[in-house]
Amino acid sequence: MIDTTTTTEADAGHGIGLGEAFQVWLRVALLSFGGPAGQIAVMHRILVEEKNWISEGRFLHALNYCMLLPGPEAQQLATYIGWLLHRTAGGIMAGGLFILPGVIAIMALSYIYAAFGNVGFIEALFFGLKAAVLAIVVQAVVRVGKRALRNRVMIALAAIAFVAIFFFNVPFPAIIIAAGVIGYLGARSGRPEFAGGGHGGGKNSATVDSMLGDELPDHVRPSVSRALRVSAVWLLLWLVPVAALLIGLGQANVFSQIALFFSKMAMVTFGGAYAVLAYVAQQAVEHYHWVAPREMLDGLGMAETTPGPLIMVLQFVGFMAAFRDPGTLSPMLAGTLGGLLATWVTFTPCFLWIFLGAPFIETLRGNKALAGALSAITAAVVGVILNLSIWFALHTVFRDTVPVRSYGLSFDLPVWPSLDLAALVLAVLAATAIFRFNLGMLTVLGGSCAAGVVLRATGII
Picture (cartoon, rainbow, N blue to C red):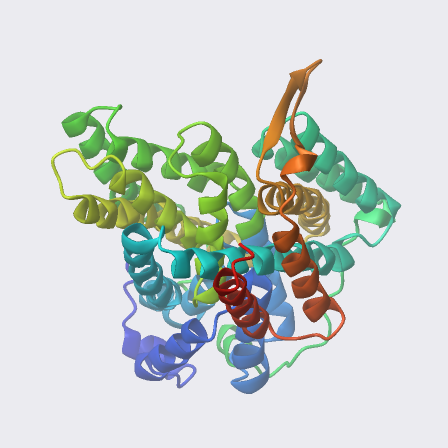
């Protein structure tokens, strides 16, 4: 797994020491608020514009690959660039630091939520959070849609994806695979609708590009033997704990279920954090009953207000699942172990995808068929995020919903008398602050929390 070339030899080509890289990646991690779009923007500003470590074209090429992978693209992008700069050690450092602040923050908030979540003040804070989160998810639909839906074909793909997942509960992996195949075939046939966007000029003297040059160095060049070593090491790190839990505790145990569910999720949840949450919401809420819909929104609110990937909400889900079924352990200890287990099986595969695939992807820069598949998948993801925003809206502004399960349909209808007027007004105000006045995410979240406290103090909620 670890490259034979020493770190000193690696650094000699570009002059960036691991100490300097550590400081920069920690800074990226601490500033990574606002979901994948905000996190990628932070990395672009620091790594491309400020440090000039990587060119615009290579940055976007790496991002394109990460968007095709299951899991959080921003964390995987950090791992990819860290690997380009400092081999395996750099990838582990960049990807690990990216999630560390979120692990600590979400764990602390999970303790507070589990202990005091039913206290009026805490409930008021999360009431406000949910309204703001709804507006932020809608903003994500608009933001991704503007970039991805460049023509009628892409709009149609987004619409079909939305109808499939919202009304017919078609599995998300099936939607993504179908979109990727359509995009790949469309690009291979020369259809202009599937042409990938240009990468722009960028900076030709960026550190990574100067270091790599025209001929790929050893750690970037694809190697079957290295791929086998990488696969063996990271599959063992990922799957041995899962197997140990299944053998030792049995499949019905909550820790075994957490390990299996989030391992499966790590393999099938494509399209970024919001798409992941759509899948988790359907399974963790409706199938496993680990959390209620409103608790899922509370967890997303935590992830939105802390640095790191939004997918860190999965640590909260794992915490609550084990907290409510602790067995012989104390609830808080069980919750801690459940949250850490969910995080481990979620992020360990992310390192596998990068260390295994990145050398091969580096040889595919400029591949039109790959760009076409990416364009179609991104368009389908817009439809999936729209599904997520409507799901959130239903469970934010309505207290009750009625399931519709007939003629192949599978969706929830709102019970209109259960409309929560205060939540609706807060959501509209949060959306107005974001879209009309361009207020920052933290400002909107803070204002919504304060509004929730005021509404609780005045007896409105």
